[in-house]
Image (cartoon, rainbow, N blue to C red):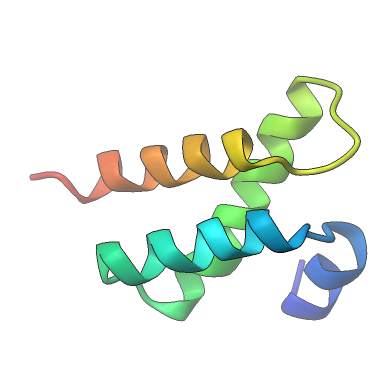
Length: 71
């Protein structure tokens, strides 16, 4: 799923997008991590049967990403 598909199928509310952008910037992640975090957050939201991606889903996805970066 490319960036265009993410925008179409995974719309983000402004507060969710802001949280994601802030987290990506603070952790020094690349732009590619932005799309990956949305994909993981969408999966988490699907598991919870949520219609939209919420801040909690983004936070959990970012948390998994930071676990991957630890030595």
